Image (cartoon, rainbow, N blue to C red):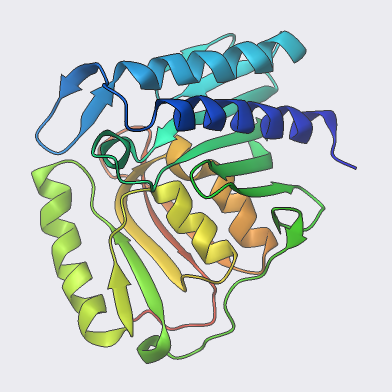
Length: 250
């Protein structure tokens, strides 16, 4: 039986996903077109939809999202939201994006939900219960050899992170079975949790991209190493993996 917090996350993710699915392939308003990123007006509307559902049920909670923060950020409960993770994919009509919602209580993530509305795949987890995909328990991959593994390498939106990410991508291309760069961090980490990928690595990421996936991977038996960026606040490096493969990152 889902707790009220998990049920709120599930309802919000599915409502947002339905809204995105209805708008997929339609003309979109671009708020900002950057060198390696796109900001859509739809991102803001989607986060507003999620926020209104959450705050209607939990009015004293805080919202920390890609499209802004609301409420007292010192609240014991903070919802961490990425309304469209994979905005560039969405804009180019590539059906690989997700809604990511997590809940943090006193600094600890206790609920995580990732929803891929185009495939109708819903990952969910709450602390102390199994990680699920469409209601069925999941586990990380049992593979142990890098040569048999599939690795996703994320490359962020600046020249510096591109320059750091490409050598890592090349290394993984040479040593893993296959290397992928798919454009949605939340789906990358969800794929690690259910064994489709053996690892997801990125040098610079925001918390809202991966918060829900952290609890998913750890609950599914995997390992997440996330370190604060040396100079940019609210940015992190992340390695999420099954924990069974030596990635030879040192």
